[in-house]
Image (cartoon, rainbow, N blue to C red; front, side, top):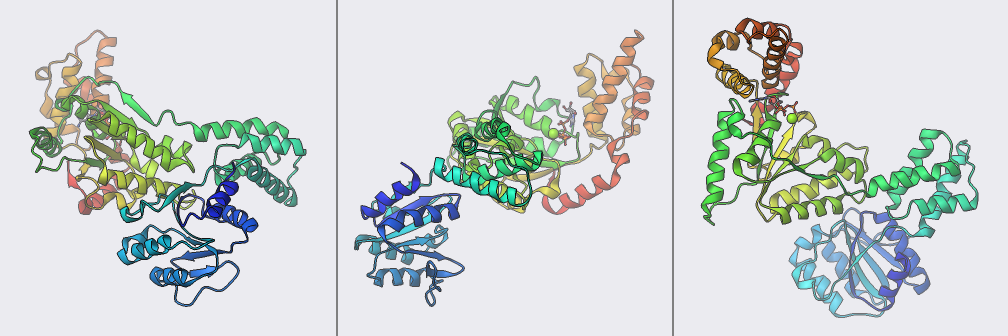
Amino acid sequence: MDNAADLRVLLASHYPLLFVETEEEPRFLATLREATRQLDIPVWVWSASTGLAKEGYEPQYQTVDPRRALGFVADTTAPGAFVFADANPMLDDPVVVRRIKEIAQSPQAGRTLILTATRPTVPDSLAGIAHRWKLRPPGPDELLHLVRRTVRDLADRGFPVTLSTADMRAAADALRGITLAEAERLLQRRILENGAFGPDDVPALRAGKAEILNTDGILELVEAHAGTLDEVGGLDGLKTWLRIRRLAMQSGNPAIEPPRGILLTGVPGCGKSLVAKTLAQTWGLPLVLLDPSRLYGKYVGESESRLEAALATLEAMAPLVLWIDEIEKGFATGDLDGGVARRLLGTFLRWLQEHAGEVFIVATANDVSALPPELLRKGRFDEVFFVDLPGPDARRDILEVHLAKRGVDPATLDLDRIVGDTNGYSGAELETAVVGALYRAAATDQPVTTERLLEEVHGTVPLSRARPEAVTAMRSWASARAVPA
Ligand SMILES: Nc1ncnc2c1ncn2[C@@H]1O[C@H](COP(=O)(O)OP(=O)(O)OP(=O)(O)O)[C@@H](O)[C@H]1O
Ligand SMILES: [Mg+2]
């Protein structure tokens, strides 16, 4: 059954209270109008900005206050479908909830209260009388209508469009399963890319849809990385912090809140990803990578429910360490994506705060300027750490780690000199120098020497020298918002 027919049945069978889950409010209202037309029931819409209005009429006096709007509904004897759009916030008011209950409990022929939200939260006291309903993806007729309209628009704007009725039907078919907004975006993208639209473009629509629907690849189990936190040079504050949390986690003391996770930001190549990778191994937990750019690329529209499914999977897999690399890529909220990223962020933040199960999150961020402030608010992550360029002691540690890892005894080198000459070098740059020296040494069948290593060091310009302003900007950002790692 299509959405409108389904709704019509619900209205005709006098359900007094519906909670509607939809990301597409305009489409829901259009569906509702269609459903009510045959029943001859007027649609009323309340919103927090305009109050309650019968469609096509001025809002009722002073009904922005939901209590008053509900009072009006309670007093109305005429039939009507009364939609309260984005109703979640008003349900925080116990009087509102009570009034909804009273209206629902004194059913009147043809009167239905409809509360919409992206994710409706039904208060306990209404659970018995409320009926949940979800707007399903558009049916063939809606999609055909969309294709017709889009094609007509484009033809009006001078694009060459050569589609027979059968082609349009094929295009509509290719778009089944995604939301109307997604379908429209897909169509427009295709047309704008090609400058035209013909029957040959239908397979491309299907491919585009497959991409949107594909749920694979959002989570990835990362193979145990050889190494523990001991392989991370420097970052002593962070390592101590982690050690203490782990002890707390293992103490089993119910009075101690389990740690949720950390956010690592800082200078590139200084060990953010390395910490995430080695932490799981140190704690003896599996490491699961969530790739937010994938989330963003593929899950336009249905994105939240997919993200939720992924999050539920994680809880089922717990205990584990969840690594979210470059979190800003998934949750940076631009204005161009119809609010998808913002909703994803909302879903993620809610989960961050409420999730059950032992999931410790290590999120890393490279571009701090793109980080939504919500992510940094207290109570989201346990701590935000700033990973700076390594100081002398940390550089010594890092050099030792990488030399030893490759079979070179650090004691054979003048580490003091190397440390002294590598001010401003990141861990990754130090590692590169070590590898480069080893490589050259091997090529000439010579041992690695201090000079050889210094040659490598002097042969590269560290990022901190190439782009000092980038490092300065990160530090000044971090000074107010993060603790040194
Ligand atoms: N503190 C460190 N101790 C030991 N090795 C390090 C350290 N920092 C960086 N490295 C070496 O450099 C490599 C790259 O570092 P990593 O990927 O952790 O940097 P990052 O901070 O995540 O950088 P980006 O911002 O570019 O993602 C590591 O795999 C490791 O070999
Ligand atoms: Mg990284």
